[in-house]
Image 1: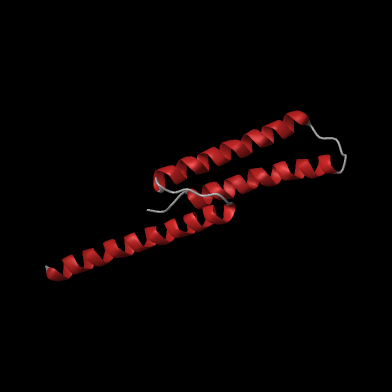
Image 2 (image 1 turned 180 degrees about the horizontal axis):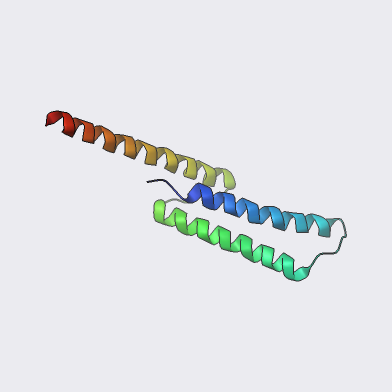
Length: 99
């Protein structure tokens, strides 16, 4: 079973990049389409909510306070999923050899 969290994190990053571009324009005193900026923030919030939901379902007791901690949890989850798959494969091989 592969985790959907890395994909959700990438989606969050994409929405944040668009939002950041708008913030940079504002910082430079350029005009922006306020409706578009609000939509970008809504998209980023939705992506963050989806990521939290996935994290909650895949790692029910996980908590984090920074991006680094979040990335470490996601990387650790991917490693644990690979280990579980490997373990299942080894159990099957032992079972098959015993036959």
